[in-house]
Image (cartoon, rainbow, N blue to C red; front, side, top):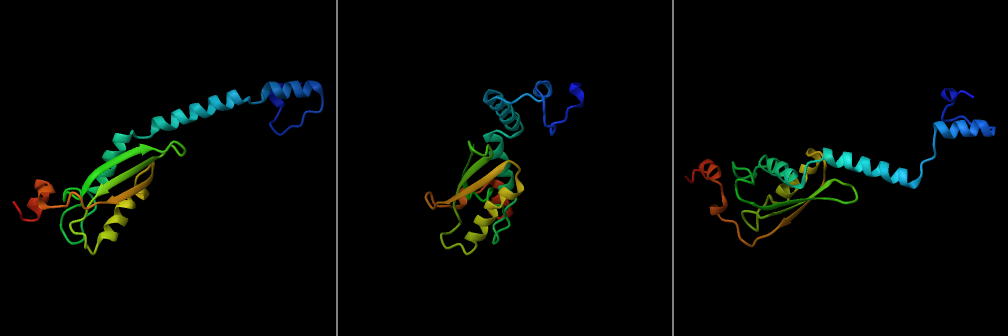
Length: 156
């Protein structure tokens, strides 16, 4: 029996055919499967940004979101207090938590801003979820703005 002529969907009917089939298409043991999965996981993770790289990418996205009432992005405005990213152990994708505030607790555009922040997930590869935590302590004030933001607002 020529082993090169055996196809994966052939059904062996003799002992010799079965031996040739198993030689060409060996059965995977659990150890083989686990090793293959570990190698695939490692290769996948090597392509993914680190937690700190993902945090930097998220900050870049935050700098593209502008407060609807002001000519300044929410990051330079000082509304973002913390960006923390980690790897989801099941999906192997990144999860992020953004702790931020608003210029006012009665901000009429609060849900718009939150939705824009959450939409970063759809634009950033490897990011599974963003949790937005709105806090008012410490309260926002103009001191939290970058110099560029102050300049854009005519405060410098």
